[in-house]
Length: 541
Image (cartoon, rainbow, N blue to C red):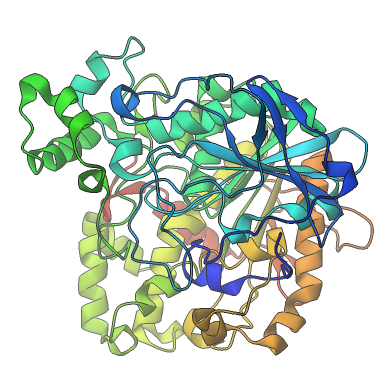
C-alpha cells in the first residue's frame, strides 16, 4: 500500500482527516489465498513495505439506504464469487471542508465497510478494533492515518478499522423514528453500526487469523467516547475483552429529550410534515442531511453523538461506571497535554484576545460554576490569556474525564493512565501536544508530501520522534496482546491506583509521575458537571 508510514502529523493537525487513499499493492504469496466469510469469499493483498496482509472495504452491514436510512443496521447479504477487497471503501457522508490534498470524492451513503490487516504469517492473533474520531461528523476508518499494516506486522495483532454513519444520518433522534422500531431506539444508528461491526468481527475474524476471544475495542476522540459506550452498553458486553480510550469525553451521551429537541429543530428546516415524517426524511436528498460547520468550537462543541435511549444506553458511560453497571475490563486511557490548542488556532486573532474576553467566554461556558472554576486557575501561570482558556477547556472536556474514568475503573480492573506530552513540531508554543497528535504515533504512519504537514513538521522533527513512535506502538501492541502495556526494552508503566495516582508521560523521555494535587483539585471540581452544546450543566441532569 503506502511507502511511508512512520508519523503522519498532517492528519493529526486536521483532527484525524487523512489526505490520501491507500494504493492497491502487489500481492504477496502469503496473502493470495481467498478467505471465507459469512457472506462469501474475499481476496486481499500483500503489503509492499511490511509483512502484512490487507483486506479493504469488507461489508459488515447492509447498505443503510432507502427504507434502511435512519434505522439500526442489518446484517449484510451473501455475495457471489470472490469479493475484491483491495480498494479503499467509500467515506460516509460528511462535510468536505477539510480536504487539503485528501480525496473526499468517494462519499456514499452506502458506506458501512471495515478494513483488516493481519500479520503475513501463520498463527492466531489478538484483535484491535479501531473506531475513528471526528466529532461524529467527519472521518473514516479508511483514511491513511489508520493504515494498520505496520502495527499488525510489527506487533503481531490483527487491526480492524471501521466506518460508521455520521451526523444526522447516524445520530438523529425523533419520537417518530423511535416508535417505528420494536426496540424503541433512536439517535444511535452510528453507534449501533459500531456494535454490528464488532459482531461481524466476532463471527469472521478467525478466518483472518484473529482470535475472537481477545478483542480490544479502541478509539480516539469520538472513537474514545465510543469505546466508553461499549463498556457501558449491554449490547456490546460479550463482544470485546479490553478497551483503549484516547481523548474520549466519556460523559458525553446526550439525554434523549435534548436530542429530540435538536432533531425537531433540524427537521423543521426540511419542510417535512409530522404525519409522514419518517417517509419524508428517507426521501430527502443526501446533501440536506449532511451537517455544516467547520469548527467544533464555533459550531457548539460535539453536537452529535450517542443518546440515552434506554436501549443502547440508560445513562452516560461515566454514570454507569459510578453505579458499577459496566464491562469491567483492562483499560488503557489518557489524553494529550494541550488538547484544545489546535481548534482555536483556526479562529483569527485568538492569540491576542485580552483577559476580559477570555473571562467572558469562560463565564458563558461555566455559568454558575464560573467563580469556583476560576479560583483554581490564574492568568499569571500562562504566557497569554488565551492559554488559560486552552487549559480550562482541555481539563473540562477531556483531562478531567480521563482521570475520573481511571479512578472509577481501577478498583475493578487494571488501568494504565497516560498523558501525551510530545510537542516537538515546528511551532511547539502555538500547537503544543494537541488533540489527535498521538494517533500517528500509535499507527506509525508518516507522510510529509502535503503542504499542511510541512507547516507543523519537517524531516528533523519526524526523525526526532521515531524512538517515541516505536515505544508507543510497542506499549499499545503489548496491551492488545496481554492486557498489560509493559514489555522488554520499555520504561515501566505501573498500573493506576487511587492511592498513588501514577500517570505515564509520553515524551522524548518517558517518565512516570503522580498526578499533581492541584490538577486533581481541578479535575474533581470539573467532574461535577458535563457539557451540553458548550454549556455546563450538572452531571445529574
